[in-house]
Length: 606
Image 1 (cartoon, one colour):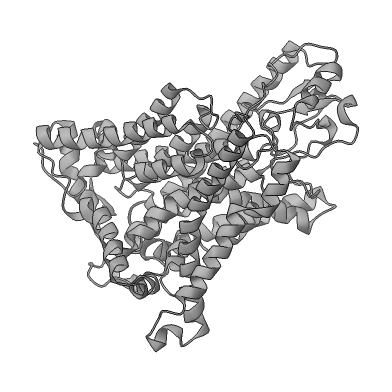
Image 2 (cartoon, helix red, strand yellow):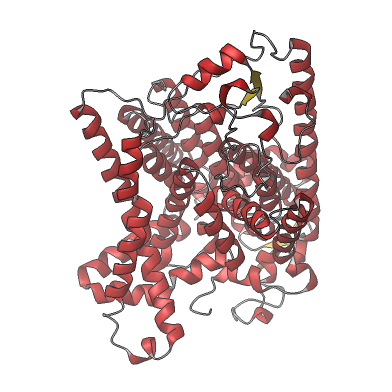
C-alpha cells in the first residue's frame, strides 16, 4: 500500500518534511547506502507505538527493499558515531564502552560524594533533606562541568582515529534526499505531491494560528495586576517586604506594570526622538527597547511592550515546534512541545511585563532554528553560513545577554560537527556586533553600559573566582546557600524534569546530544550567576530543549501505559499535557507557588 494513499495520522509530519515514496530499484539503491534502512510506509508510526524504537526513528519493516518505502530527510541521515560520522559496528562497540553522558553522570556522583565531606556547620547535614539538597546541587554542577570536557575528549579521539586510519570522515554526513517528484514505477505523481504539500501548508498555517490564539489567551489571563511578575513582588507573597501593596510596580499608560519599565522609558523616548540620550542600567537591552519603539506610537508604551512579548511568545512556540520536528519526526512530540511553549511558565510570567526576557527567550530559539536551517552541523557548511549565524547571535545579544548561551551552544554542539574556522568566525561576528554597539553608543549617545544590571554578570564571575581562590569548602558553601537544585526546579517544576529524563532516555543519540547541549549552554550562565542572585528566568533559556524532551517523555509513557490501545495512548498524552498546562496556570485561581518559585527560586525548600 503506497504511503501517498494513507490518511495522515495525528502528529504526523506535514509540510517541510514531506515523505517521498520510492520503490523497486530506487528503494534498493537508497537502502544500500551505509546507515540507511528501508521503512515500510504501512508501518510508519506516528510515535505512540511501543515497539522499543527510539523516538524519531521509524520501525524497520522485515520485508526489506521489496516493500514500498517512505523516507523523510531525518531518516536519510545515518546514525552517527562518536565524531558524528556514519555509525559502524566498531563505532557501536566503542560507544558501548564510552558514553560521555553516562561518564559525566558517574563523575558528577563522585563530585557530589566528595563535596559532601567538606561542610562543617552541623545544621547543613542534620537532616536527610539537607544532605540530599547539597548533594543534588553538587551533582548538577559536576555534571554541567564534566560533560562538555568529555564531549571534547570524545570528538578529539574520533578525529585522531579517523586520521590514524587515513580516512577523512565528514561530520554528520547527510545523504542526498530524493527530489520532490522521484521518477520510477509506483512513485507519487507530481499533482498528488503538490496536493499533499498544499494540505501540509494549510495544516501548518492552522497550527500557527492556534498557537497564536493560545498565546493571546494566556497573555490576557495574566495582564496588568494579574501579571505574575507583579503579583509575586507583593508583600503578601511572603518573600519581599520592601514593596508597597501593589508590589514592585509602576503605572504605564494607566496600566499597572512591572516596576523596571520605568527605567526603560528614557531609552524608549530616545528611540522615539522625544528625549535626549540618558545612561541607564539597562543599556545592554537597547535592542528590545528599539523593537518596542516601533509599536509605541500607534498602541502606546504599555501595549507596545505587551505586543512585543506576545509576538516573541508566538515565535518561540513555532521555533520549538519546528526544531522538534527535525529531531522527533513523525511523532506527536513537536506538537506537544509547541503547546508546552505556548503555555510555558517563563512566557506566562513575563506576559505584559515591560521586560526584555520574552524577546530574549524567543531570540535564543530562533538562533537555534537558524543554525539548523543553515545546515551548519555538516562539515561542508560554508563560512558565509557561519557568518550569518554569528550576525544573528550578535543581534540577539543586543536584546539581552542571549549571545552567551548562543556561543556556548555553538561550541558544545558544534565542536565535533562543524569546522573550527566556522565556529571561530561565528564567535568573532557575535562578539563584534555586541562590542561595536557598546563602543558606538558610548561615543555617540553617551551610554555608560555600567552600573546596576550592567555589572551583575561580571560581579557574579568575580564571586566564583574569589571562592575558588579561598578553598573548595567555600565553593561547597556557596552551592549550599544558593541551591542550584532550587534554581532549576524554580525554572521548571519537578514533573517537567521527570518527563524530560524519560524523553532523554528514549530519544535518538543526536536528539539527546542536541538537547543536552542546549541545556548545558543555558545552565552554565544560570549557575555562574548564583553568587549574585538565583534567577530561574536565566535557567529558563533551556526551554527549547526541555519542552521537546518532556514531550518525548509523555509520548513514551503513553506507549508504556497503553501498549495495545492507540486511543488509550492519546488519552494519556492529553491527560499529561493538560496537567502541565494546568500547573502553569494555577495563578489564575490564586495559587502563586510556581510563579513565586520562578521569580525568587525555590531555594533549599523541597
